[in-house]
Length: 557
Image (tube, rainbow, N blue to C red; front, side, top):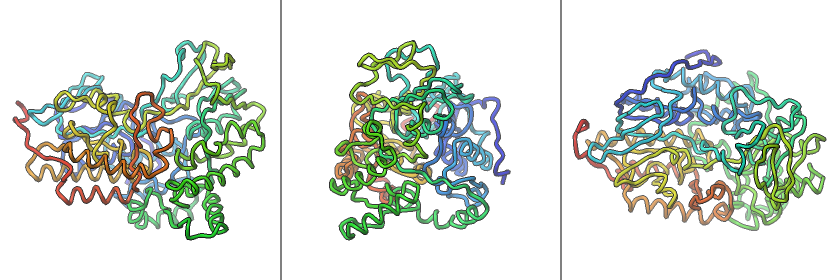
């Protein structure tokens, strides 16, 4: 095992082999483990990433304040006890630099770098129906012939960068949080605007307020927030969580959300006093426990949702006090229910707006019209003059990263065009019409949004590895969902989602943040454990939702 805290920096770009068994797109949490598994199988596999090094989400999202909101000791690979115990975390919810170092540690411990190419973007992929293989092109001029193409591109990795008219006219610096520069931004004493108050915007706002001269926050959709408790970890805490490896390995994959805690209470069985006690206890935990382990009924029953939402509202109001700030930063009754949007953890975020150098601008009814050379202009005509604009305006979630690649399957089908018509997959792992294309973090699986990501991404990559192995053992070359199989999964997904209040809410969870994107709950809402069981049943049952076949022609035809 390598020195757990040593970071290795990549140098020259490795060439991409011209012929492969499997090409992995992405070198984040999913891509690293997928590449490792494929190599363990003895396949000739390679991974490409646009970034200059490993990390995925934790490479790109290096904005001020970026950190875990899953506890570090469960945001882990659990396939190797030695790998797990070889790394020590400094606190409960570490920041981006430490997370990035951890992913370097994993990469080097597994000796993956020799089969990875950085600064390499996959631009085009076309399936050859005769050979049953993919022809893949990169921006570096590589042309790769591969049997399997595996998208480990991340669920939140396609930033919505071009959101407002006139962005190119701005005389200062303008950046999206998902593409924050490695060198950082010079914000000391400057007039800085942050657009967006979702989870990312909140982390930025609470972090930079004390550094800038003036901070102007443009808030459209206020969020329910939970305070984070983030204690430092020493030898005792390290021994405590490392002793739980077997427990985590056994329990996390079968929980509802992939976290160590799960729903244990039933609303109807408890008195009002006992319900309040549960809410107070889970709120005081300083984690996502109130959201993910208090009462599951908040996702299905309007009355329960309203009561829990009001509980959180009153916690926020008590901290803000100022009526104008409350109106701007606290969701109103009837807006949407607590937990139907992504719930951010924060540290003195609300209190930040009490600073003299921080202004909250409500753009719900007076939206941003354009970016002008001097700053941000609202529809009402007001211009806020700024030196730096930080856009925390979100992503084309789930489908965006793969859809930005020109991927062409059978019969001239284009993936982006198909997803523009309807957001469909089979188990979130394959798409009808695109043989031998696998995906992780894609629509219609828990990994698209509602999961502790390492839990779900490990499960998906392990399923893909097993599927490829089963295909090869069967003597076949190609696997693809059947049209009927995909329809069956979509119907099951929708039936599950339609019973959930998430489906009735406008958010990135339903694709509502992207103009023209078909509306469908992106994440499978039946639970992480239930999804795993369905995937296992599919494999054990001989892949009834899929069809296996032999290639029509030899590989070199």
